[in-house]
Image 1 (cartoon, rainbow, N blue to C red):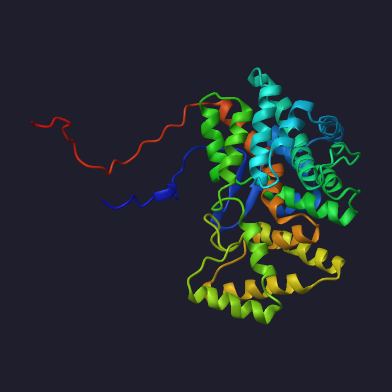
Image 2: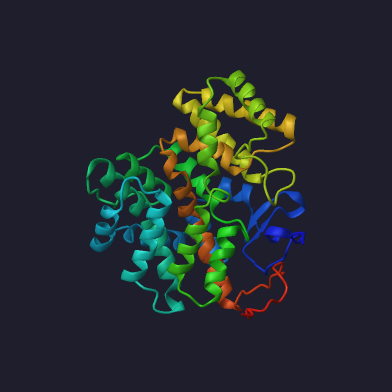
Length: 370
């Protein structure tokens, strides 16, 4: 029997949400009714995280209080530091965050759903600390101080990673990227987190589920592969030849097309502008020029548009972020979206348990004649 036409649940409405719209009429992305372009131009990641979690943009007083709490919550328990030190340097950075999230859930459990705001703020504050503590310890055996005075998640991460406060352009570039990655309706990791939440499990378990799902290369990680592809070419002409060869072999080119968007990914133009600006700031336009040529070839040959992951790859590169940390940045941002969906699921919960079409053998008997 053939697989059902909605294999992968494509086109299946699996629930209702008031958090975001994705690909409406083939394009467009909104968070709580705000267009992504508007949010990227006029808000910070902390504004957007509050919006997703609470339904409205914060007042100036709420934003200040939210940021102050996140700054105060960045420190890591000594027991968690010990666990991070024991994880090998060869570990995948996503596995480090998955383990860190689960361990913190043992040390600071969510005692009831009334704890959910405390837990999500703790995770938003500590994920950059976890990743950078592990990274520096494995690289240099240095136990870094995971606190900084930077009020933004983006600036705090860059400060810990690079050992110095970031410039305003770099901070704002990463802040914008976090806004773009923060939420995307019923994507695979969010839906998985909602399934976990529907069992009335704790928030740490739901976020751990999200991280594990995002780890898969068909969901997160496309920007890592896009960066490796872009950096493999010497110039735009070399890139065109290389992409044409890959297309002839029917290789998949990561960072193009989208399961939901039909005409364009509205986030791509935003991050592309930052990639161009950062390349100019670095005095290195080779990678950006190669990216533009790859995009032109993919549009000409396949009619495919770049998605968020494609130009975010070079943007992150110019921020001096290791490729292995590209997908963890996704976690820093999407934690706000995952938690918002967990809260929404809990508010009107029903166990998520779909049916399956059986395609195995007909009824058989286990009895054997002797």
